[in-house]
Length: 102
Image (tube, rainbow, N blue to C red; front, side, top):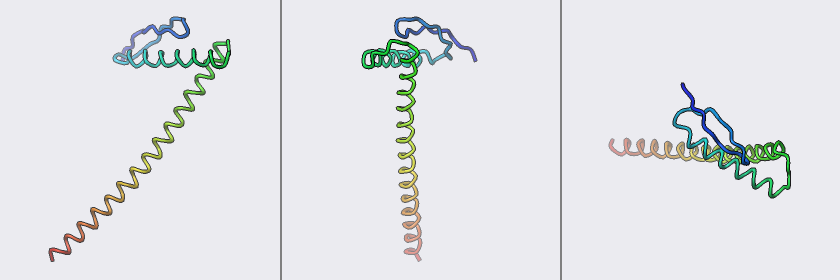
């Protein structure tokens, strides 16, 4: 699969990044989100080192990802329980309907 070099700008510095075809917009959106987070962290924390800013941003994004994964897991468990309840309800209705015909 071929890739394209896409230019993104992070904290005023341009970077060339390889990107699969059709993913350029997603990469640009991710770069914009990262840039905004880095600017926010720089203003809020007064950290001047780009390395420290990058680590803080990575930790923030990882934390957000962990929270979303947990929400997704809880949602999946809730849906599994509802599906099982619906299956039992349908099975009971089929049994009842089948017995009513006899």
